[in-house]
Length: 288
Image 1 (cartoon, rainbow, N blue to C red):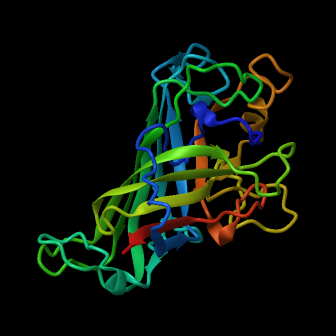
Image 2 (image 1 turned 60 degrees about the vertical axis):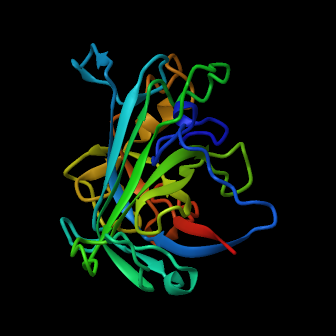
């Protein structure tokens, strides 16, 4: 996988976002309270550039080449059941005490509790980014940036719409779970701010796996210990060639990288490919 000192797209894909809204840090003397968290999530992602790959006649994905833009999107799925309804949950235990707003109109206080997810995903863009860890001198790259959104079960009291929130997020790059920059990481950090809906104004910090995949009907999922056909999801195997291609540049022995599909998430609190710890997503706010 990608070395920790390289950021996909000036940062990395999170997956989840990049290069946009700066993290609003509280004043040095302000108290900060964690109001919520999300864990054990999984999303299937795709990457698409406006640059066409002449070999296939189709758009590139995430590559180790220069001067290519990219749109990244990921959609939450049931981690254990194909087309299942259980996409995970987020827990917000102190909403009432902290005055956390809901997504109703007019706005009220969001009740405490575990919020089951009915839809979640990300939509990101960078005008130029790559995954080439060898090229450390390119300063004309920008982190993917965009939105992280959740829709939850239930209805708001007045609008009768489902509770929902949208955050603008930015990818910080690969983390270093084992505190060893020489070893690979498939975990990406990100941060941002809730700009719409429930928990409006709260800070978002998180980690997600970033594991390239390819479609393969022979994939075994959920994984079986020792099975060489273990996959990242139903009908998807891990794209080791794409991951290795980012390690040595376009002319390296592993060949050019072109990552079209990937997994994001935090299933079981770890990444699927390298079993590195993944913290999931947290929401925090300042307190008076």
